[in-house]
Length: 418
Image (cartoon, rainbow, N blue to C red):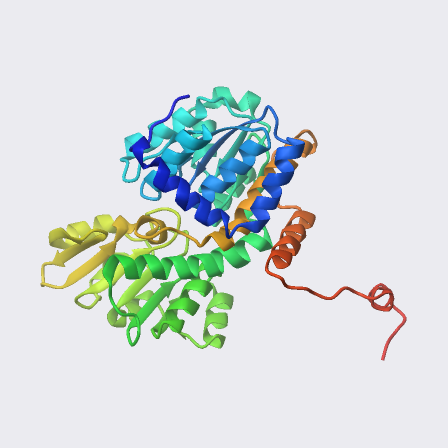
């Protein structure tokens, strides 16, 4: 078995942390039990490019229980938990290629090592694996039956590929599942981003001004959690509907140009490039803290900031201080990468339980249906989404009502008016 991790001696620590996460992942645990009996993925080779965390380890073990052969690499150079990577290799026999802090060359080397498995399926978080296959490893396309994609940014890239006719195999957009984006993106990103920013800085949120760039599901969750910690929240948006929603939710909405002058904290969650750029840095107050919780590290224009700075230093482990020519200091967290995974541990296991349940069941669905699917990007089937919600509610001890026969008849009729 080939692998490249930081230190196998970290495996015991990783094993315990994986067990701790599993205790709060009842949906994925139930799927693993069924997979172990039915082996729906027997003989299927899966290359996964995901954040190497305790929750991802649970997903890998589930796929392995289903009969799949797995390789795993990191979907972000700073998101790997080295002890988890070691445990997956030593305790689960899974080939892992991931080291926290790896440089760009190592990142792509690891990705290609994972692809050397000659997979039948790709499992992505950001579509880097899919893009690598389509651009540099085209010889692998013949064996590919399909793939899955975890996050908003990756789905955007894949839909672009499909629209341009360059996507060569079907992919399920796991991010589109309601049990993924309504919970993972909102509650997971909201809590874990605040966790990462506070861990990195040890600064107080209460009474400060917190600027959230983007009011999608991630932005909604982040704004809510920042407000709950006592911050005065400002939202910036380019979409009038989302901007209006943020106003109705009680937040101030303004342009980034205006927000830059008054913000203490800034966090981007848009999926787009250069959301915070030179003209915004020029307006920021001394000591402003800037972070990103979108998938790629392009939302903050760091090249512009570097050109403006007369000095830069790492003042804390995940805080780089840029001193501008006029003496103002701007602090960038985690090199502009995913702050919730770079300086914290990512989403809590209870929300990743649903996200990765979607991954596991979508992989099973792809194996069963791949021959009938055309080359396109598909949403998670509604029945899978609802089943996950039912299992989650049951595990939480929550009971819900069912329609009576009378109610079903009423909803299907057209002649029962006022």
